[in-house]
Length: 267
Image (tube, rainbow, N blue to C red; front, side, top):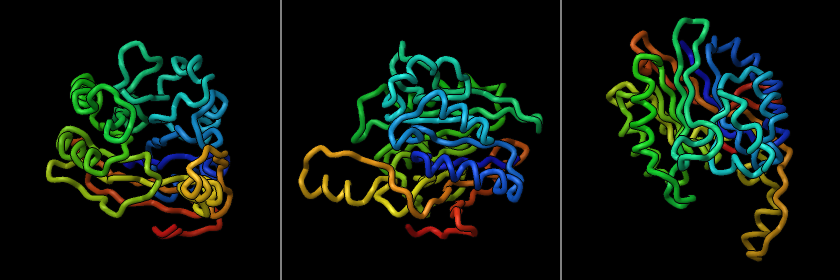
């Protein structure tokens, strides 16, 4: 089967990219299953129930997230109502929602999705590696394909997770930093890996936010308003093709612009 994992959706421009680019991309690439990170989908910070519904209606099967999932407080009430809306599995016990899901597909192959958050330069959470062990073990016998969203700041922590799960997961993909990396590969055990799948949103920006606001913050070190930028909207992610044993057979980066064609890999 062929899986598309879409990088962090940022605000209205990112949602527009999903609406306008995803259907044709799925047809062109013969995509069977779509996963996307949604933690920046509501004005750049967090997500709401209404936006979750919009993204599911747009063709996404599972939504992952990260440290910004709680930025819109209303998601606390609706998180438990969506089996396919994930928050990192290594949040402490008692946090709303779930960190993994197994979804049956029309192909007859069930897909397991696990959401993890890193700890280096981020909020202190439970160990993502131990959480990965627990969630993979739970999926034994129920999910032939397992995709892991490793939402982390540190490149080293993401790469370590790739090697840690090599042979146990179909794919380990990094999110959070919004810059697509060029290290997509298949590890020796059959796990597809990339350090960051990129961003779906405006590239005339600093990782999705207006350039002037970010430069002002760096120059003055004072709080200011971070508004989502608008120009040069793209959809980024990776496609992963799996073999009959659930191992990855191929992984390819995707970068599509709203104005048509392959956007390449430079902002």
